Length: 356
Ligand SMILES: *[C@@H]1O[C@H](CO)[C@@H](O)[C@H](O)[C@H]1NC(C)=O
Ligand SMILES: *[C@@H]1O[C@H](CO)[C@@H](O)[C@H](O)[C@H]1NC(C)=O
Ligand SMILES: *[C@@H]1O[C@H](CO)[C@@H](O)[C@H](O)[C@H]1NC(C)=O
Ligand SMILES: *[C@@H]1O[C@H](CO)[C@@H](O)[C@H](O)[C@H]1NC(C)=O
Image 1: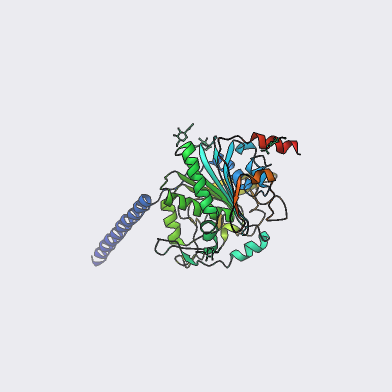
Image 2: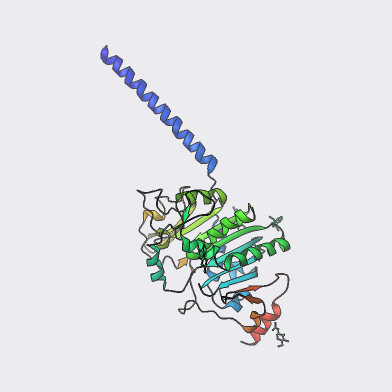
């Protein structure tokens, strides 16, 4: 008898615990759902944007400005540049233009190329979360990445070009992209555009991007720019850096969502790439974090497209004197090449090809 009573009590406890647990879980899921929006991955768009992120690395500014560079072809040939911004001292570069195919303003960034990629990657281990993201409690970011966009000629150049595109083409969608450190700058730019223009049509897609802030920053970022995809490739080391310490989730760097992880599976000579769309945490343990980040070569090719400079000379700037007339230079020697997209640059192209 006593035994039976115990059993009944035990069953009740179990049922109670189970139901309250379920209730709690449902509630959490529900809140999660309300707060978080996640981007939909579009493979076709990724294949297009990776080419912009590759083209922005080129250092022949004449070819970039006239959109005649070797990487300015194929899926992205239908593009007109409005502004090309170069920070000479820090070796940063970005462009803004309009794609008729995408019906969008496209912005692309490249990060520093001053030192070798190996040195740059080694430095990434030691990057501190050293400034507060303005206006957001507890949101910390890395000062170097933050200021590469916010405290250089890139930001004013980009904002004025976006304004110009708006005047000519109306309120088109804005897509921001970049690879590696350029991806970090693209993220800060996307967030900035959302904050300064109040524009709801900002979309960000980055490739092989390092972590840029902590968990509070990632949450804030995701609320403001939910339409963001962060593509990672195989064992690419850079998305693993600066390190994520899962036993200190509040104190460590933390990626924002949504990761899409590309990895190869092979059977004999048959190898194909899987594109895994990851969860909303930003740190999905079944995506790139499930493997060790030990590859630089996986960092330098996304979707088979070469990412990085075309020459070993690093930050070398080549510019045709005829293009200089489209530019203005600041006191530090940085310059902005700017044109009205409705004015044809065919004459410039013609002169360029006749001189070759
Ligand atoms: C994916 O992107 C391409 C290129 O912008 C677009 O044409 C296509 O409609 C998109 N697909 C979906 C399902 O949104
Ligand atoms: C911005 O850059 C200048 C020099 O380039 C530097 O003196 C200043 O401290 C920087 N400010 C911030 C907030 O990083
Ligand atoms: C381009 O985008 C704008 C703004 O989103 C929209 O009004 C327009 O209809 C689009 N044009 C085409 C051809 O899709
Ligand atoms: C192109 O070359 C022609 C003559 O060869 C010259 O008249 C014209 O000004 C040049 N255009 C530019 C943009 O330099």
